[in-house]
Length: 329
Figure 1 (tube, rainbow, N blue to C red):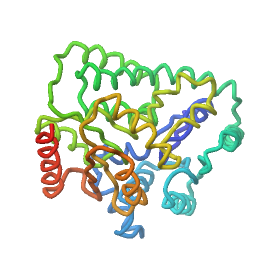
Figure 2 (cartoon, rainbow, N blue to C red):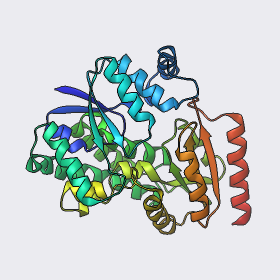
Figure 3 (cartoon, rainbow, N blue to C red):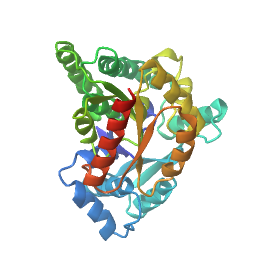
Figure 4 (cartoon, rainbow, N blue to C red):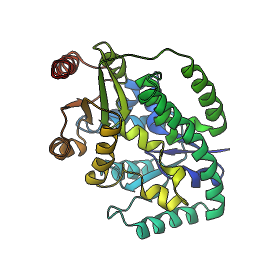
């Protein structure tokens, strides 16, 4: 099977219908035991130190794993993605562009999806067959989310991992489905997790995945992972076609559209406080201004850079934030 890399969540249904094994380069980077080396590889090849570590890691992962084809998002992701795609082309990698229209018009998104289908020579019927199958798998991931915030049995880290894995289904959707069914059965057999505080994690999925275990040391747990949940398309099964499904995907569109869903989930999940994670040198840092003004709930902004574990300063800030929330409660 042909292998293709993606730089963020794209309409994977089209790629699978075209016979590709899809691999999210972000997931390779974060899970690699050569994590720091992948960033260093990018910097040796000319990436500035004052640029996003995620983009450097994605570049390093693509080079280290000898990818020949990559899908890059030219609209709906950060501007650094365009430059990254140009570097990939210079390195001889074939790059396929995809755009989430910034105007968030269904008609323009339909044109973008149709163009993407034409590139890979697949029909809407073929794509819909894949979408229906994948949404059944996504519905299993939705059950893990419910086991997190309703049943209080799944951990926040499990919630993060399984939802974020929906960007590429770990390269094999059938194996991923089997893993999910076994995991759900195992989670259901557990005792309820009891913590005083219920937290939301919003923003870029973290490089510092130890944030989940760290938070739980302070009588708190994260029961909502915003962007990771969007990667899993929890509302996708309700829509009649791929156009509606990707129109409803909040991540690539304007911040107001994201905030509507965040507010809904804060209320539904009875959230006490929000941790907003931003990546150094990312434009989404500026969006924190809007988020802070829009949400009527305590928010802590946490910034990550190259480290894949929390530093001492960030730990102190999180601990102080959680102490404040407990005192309020």
